[in-house]
Image 1: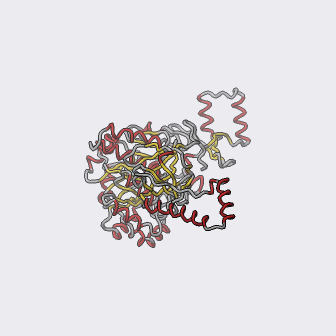
Image 2: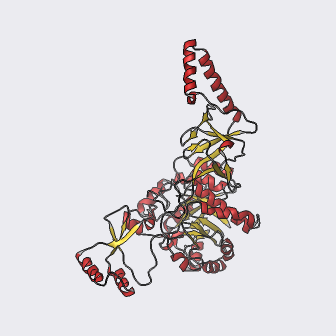
Image 3: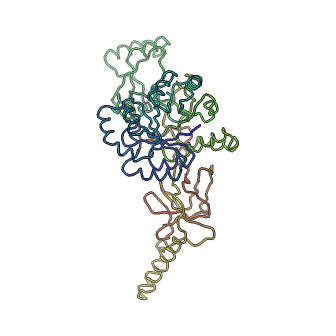
Amino acid sequence: MELVCPAGNVDKLAYAYNYGADTAYIGLKRFSLRIKADNFYDDEYKRVIDLKKKYPNKRLFCALNIAFHNHDLEQFYKNIDYFHEYPIDAFIVQDLGVVRFLQKEFPGTHLHLSTQASCMNKEAVKMYRDLGFKRVVLGREVTLDEIRKIKDEVPDMELECFAHGAMCIAYSGRCLMSAYLTGRSAQSGFCSQTCRWDFDVGTQKSASDRLRLAELNEKGGVLSASDAKLVAQSGILTLEEHQRRGEFFPVFEGDDFTAVLSSKDLCMINNLKDMRDAGVDAIKVEGRMKSVYYVAMVARAYRKALDALDGKISEAEARPFMDALGEVAHRESTTGFYYNRGDADKTTIGASDSPYMLAATIEGSLDSESVLSAGEKLVADRNAEIEAMHPNARAAVLRDLEKHPEKVVRTVTRRSGWKVYKLNALNKIDSGSDLEIISPTILSKIVKGSEYEFVNPVTGEKLDWVNADHECAIYTDLELEEGTLVRMKDPDFVEGKIRDTGR
């Protein structure tokens, strides 16, 4: 099965490819359902072309899956030259209004049907095949048995199904809740994930509400099942979101209503054989708005699982990488609709969370000799400057340096077998802290504070700490491949406690 992973920007695209994705899907400008993802703009197509050259067997899909209004179509037509700049292998669409235009403008590019189209039966799949679609991303409500019957009936159509990531409580993600509560339409890419907000259930007490509540209070406030049902169906209950006090949304309970609000995350990593046996050609990971760390870890886990399924590695080799999925931000997991609807109907609470934070990334090796020589020159120049001073001034400077050793120019010293790597710091890291590295092949490795030094790659000066937007490198005897991630334990993480994400 093909592994299709998300890429919300160029960096995430590189990590998706590097950590095992066969294919990555992106959004260009404002024509996908993840407007809040970074997406791709300006001349970023040049970096994408370079990545395709670096990974010649990887594919690139473009999510063009909004529901187009007339003005959206006009904007798309105006931007078509920009789309031609990208080496796109397939477009993922839900709106049939763009099909003929895409077939004309991109005759060699495949068309894939988005899950937003809610395609879940064999006759619909046949229809999309006849329209020229190469692949259908089936609606998330489809079961494995239904997938098997569709594949048996339409064997020439590629079937792609979601295997991992956040799920929406709405039908195949076609949700109106965000538009209703915030005016931000999910179908235009502006989903505010209102289903995951923190709500209080209460009452907006009008005069009639108070009368009905008084009647209940006369019963001691203890409701029988029939009374509770009457309350739920009375219309007096409301939801109030924690950060929108004073805004009340009515709650109405009907017979056999599905649970609403925050669904569990989908995770099929232990069930990939069942997906393959059902006829799934490609598995998909959700998450264009997720972090580099998330994309890398999930891509790596599913790559190992698929390789084990194909007999390329053993189950024992793959299992630690698969289990490491618990180290990325996630909610409780479910197998969705694949086995029975009851699994999908179970909801959860709170934001996704992780015990780790991504501290830095390794951007490749540097010319160690140049960095070390720069440091030696810095020391020599400083010593020459002091030596050239008037004796009284020189004595004063030396006394000051003795009192304030932090002012002494410090550089890393030559060590046999040590190398310098460019470090992209994402958070503040103090030198001497224990770090943990992960890569496509390294499950995890603790790096003690004595096993590395931070250095300014331009001056060769030793650094006590590094932070984002500063020139920095790491000097170590470890072999670090480009794309290695450096993570640290998140000091604010508490097992079982849901943190306020600051949404």
